[in-house]
Length: 422
Image 1 (cartoon, rainbow, N blue to C red):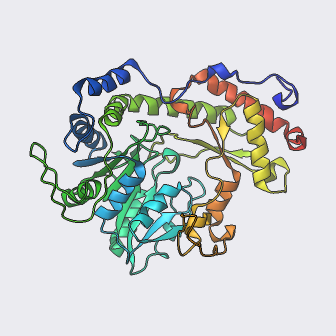
Image 2 (cartoon, rainbow, N blue to C red):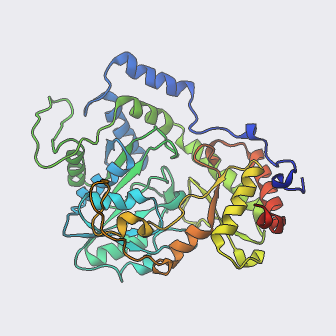
Image 3 (cartoon, helix red, strand yellow):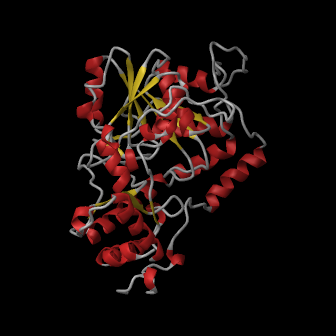
């Protein structure tokens, strides 16, 4: 096992040992069959959507849930409910998925990026007050890799400055922060049910809040500006501009079935993460995830950071990181890079006009320097994940984690060979 698979050695991990995600059970299939048998495939008062909204609100510990067709639309609904408009700014972490920022732009507001905490990748609360202006309407807190951000500190800063807080809890379904679940830690929240998430339904979203007015606003945004009351005929009366952000019944039926197993998936992921952390503790060259004692993580990603100086490497850290990922992949480990650059580096946020149509002449890109957001840039340059969208920690056997430990130790022990390989 000492010779790298890259150079002809035996791979540490056999491919057949991985369990695919999402896990689809007989109960899931029966739930979808039930929709088809019923013949009600969509509708604002259809049974699956209403049941999911009630069950997820109860699970999170809030009064209201509005189901949508995607996580991005759920975030858009949260921002609209928070009263965000074209005259406003919204603070968003520089290290997240682009949808967090796109939801702000869809509401016509200006995105103001904030650097993140190096230990967690979450929004750095100590930087917030320096970014708040008279135009700031909201702060978006993203729970990166499934660990809730410092919500008490963020909420306190927001309250002092008269702004609202919106959670992006897409990666953190079911995780607790000081006894409360993600999705119920701010004025409003949006979450994704994309197939990669720990509550997977293919695509779908969930807006949550404790505020009745915010819930009404979100529900109007999702359905053409209409008020739809349970048990009453639809009036087709639009109170304002809205979108068609509804999903369909099969998505919600699958989500309801998966919700019943969510806690067990999170528990398996935490157990597997703990096994990895214990097996890799003290290994020079990498930093392991750090979870604060007052909160949980879903370990949507088990994110590892390469430390080039500890491995005697003084070049571009991305080259070292990418070579390590390649070597681990050859060993049979499911490893990948989640975000290759901070969101403010994206062309969409470096142009005054976001020109996506090929016939529209785009404005030149504004300059971008990694030093603008040094922590987010460093995380993007040095991080990779153990476990992928198709094979996350939620459903893997603990013995597989032991083989991952063997593979990581094997690769790091052979860094000179890894760096020489074409």
